[in-house]
Image (tube, rainbow, N blue to C red; front, side):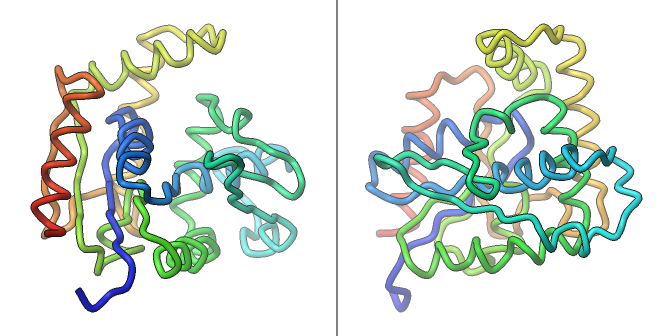
Length: 225
């Protein structure tokens, strides 16, 4: 290959298992894992703390001027920082998720994060997951996968995850929020959620983690050998 590094782009809707599967793949391949959704969630959290709602009735570029987001790898695990604060747990709430959808529709936010994401791919063999990695962020990635699952299964996964953290949201609320976010992400004017033309569709409905990981490992092996 001409590129010195290998980039694997995994896109898909919320709850498809992107982060969990990408982390497992990165560990097996000894690649860096970059959770781009965490970056958008962090900016969403920053705007929430500034007192803005999802309408973002503000000068987004101006408000971004004092927001500093950073990814640091601590003992091989990705942590996301807002300034000097580790917000890796604070960004995993339904509110932060919906706010992430709102800020990700803003071109100022996408541009703010674009170079940071591409820089990781230039420096490291990496697996990057998100919603527009194969279409916008890394259009020349050697492997592009669009990961999906049924609405109900994705909502149940997220519901169980939230319950383990003590969140009281009901399954119905999680399913409704997820469908709303799916709609928002796929209908936004800037970099909508959709498979890249050369992406391989991988459906994890009814599959456990190991089965899903093996399915993607097979795709990656075929594309990189």
